[in-house]
Image (cartoon, rainbow over all chains, first blue to last red; front, top):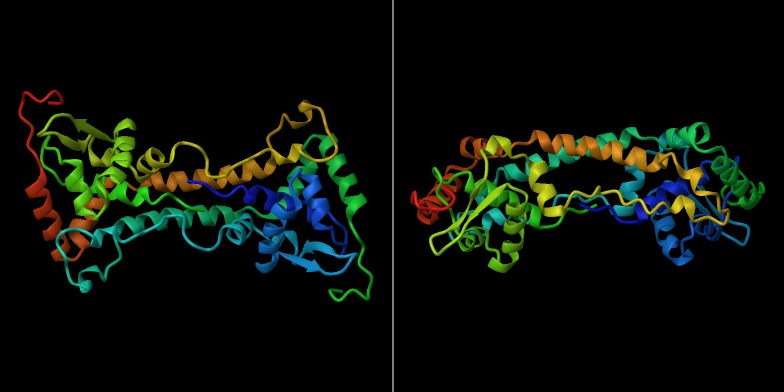
Length: 171
Length: 171
C-alpha cells in the first residue's frame, strides 16, 4: 500500500505556510526551493490543496499561497485526501461475481463481507489521520525539532513571505 | 492512497481455501476460475501468500494450495502485507533536508514530526486490519451472504478440492 510522494511535500508546504504571518503569502517557487523540489512537480500538489480549500492562491506578481483556514482546522486527513483523492485505498472489483456460476444480480444486494471489513479498517485509518492537526505538527516542530532547523525554517519564512496589501483581492 | 488490486483477489482466495476440508488443496487454476482471473496474474499473489506463510503449496499433479494455519490465525493485515510488502504507506523522502540551508546531519537525529504523525495513524490502520480475522470473514459469509452465493461457493469447493493422501509431503 502506497501513498504518493506528493503527500510528504504537501504536508511540509502546509506546515511551512502555517508559519507565515497574518495574511502573507509565499510563492510556489519558494516552497519548491525549501524542499529541493521542482516547481512544476510541486505546482500540481499546491493546486490540489487549493482546490480542496486548504490553501488560498493569491494571484499576481506579489501573490502566492497561504492557508485558507487556521491550522487547527486542517488535519493530515484533509491533506492526504486532497492529494490522493477521496477513493478508498481498498479497490473492490466485485470479483465475487466473476465465477463460473452466474447468479442473478439480486444475489449481490448485500455488500461483500471482504469489502466491508477492509473499509472498516480504513475508517480507523482515516479517523486517526483526522486526529492529527497541522497546528500540532507545527507546535511540536517549534518545541521539539533541532533548534538549528527551527531557526532555518523561521528565517526562510521571514525571507520569502509576502505581506499582502489591503488592496489584495483576498483581503 | 491505493492498495493493489491483488489484495481483493488474495483475500477471496484465502477465504475460499478456508472452506476446503481437512488437508485438501485447491489448484491455482480453480481459484483463478472462481474469480474470473487469469491464472498467471493470480499465481503471483498465491506465491506471495505462500512466501508469507499464509498458504502452503503442495506440489505435483494432484497438488494445489491450502491454508498454512487456521483461519482464526490469519488476519487481513497478514494478507495485505503479504501482497503489498511491509513498507509503510507513507513515503518519507526526508525532503526536510533538501532546502537551501544545509545543516549538519546531527540536526536531523530526531525523526521528522510529519513522518511520526503519519506512521502513528498508519499503526491504527494496521491494528484495525489485524483485528479482522479470516475466520470471521468466512463465518459472516456463511451466515449473512445470499444463500445462492453460499451454495455456489460450497459446491465449487466441493468440486475442486483435492484430498491429499497420507503420502503427501505436506501431510
